[in-house]
Length: 295
Image (cartoon, rainbow, N blue to C red):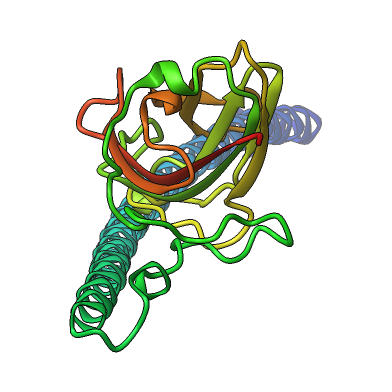
């Protein structure tokens, strides 16, 4: 009965070989599956990192665009506000400058009208015989020079009559001058926000030199203080030199000049002058002078 059947030992050997073959196949399949799984994991991990980087870059770009847009809008609004503030500041300064010029012009006109009124009133009073004509004329526009101030005489307050200059050409004496006002002076500053010339007047006679105070940002200045000067006149002095200057931090520049041959005017008389300044465009200088020769 057992003829033709394999022996049990061979069956066990074949069984053992078959089991070993199956185990080897299982190990190979497991190794292959593990490698595939690792490869899939690496691919998924790389894909995930790539997607993450792309998403981060997109978010960063959107944030950058938003920040740039906000900065642009902020800069536009800031520029608009600055421009509006500058326009408002300029308008306010312009209005203030115009009001100041109107006030100063009106003040000067009222002062001149008052002097003219006093002159005519006292003239008619004198003509009516109620007072002495020499005492009726107004004082010069400036305050007293001091004890040596000359008394008013005929012609005071107006441009005095010319006379023969030979009579006083060699006379020594004292020259009194009052700087009153400037008119339509040139502007040599920026002109922005009311920044115009800062005028003052330099008075020269021979080696003598005096200056008025500086009036800031005014093309029609009126001097009320520090504007009265007493000058000693020698035989060689003939011309009084006046120059309007624009005060600056480093160097003053000229707004125009004028000269006066005071010996050609009547002595012992106040004379009011309003000279067009040389090299001063349309600028004018108003002042009064009085020459008192030595007796």
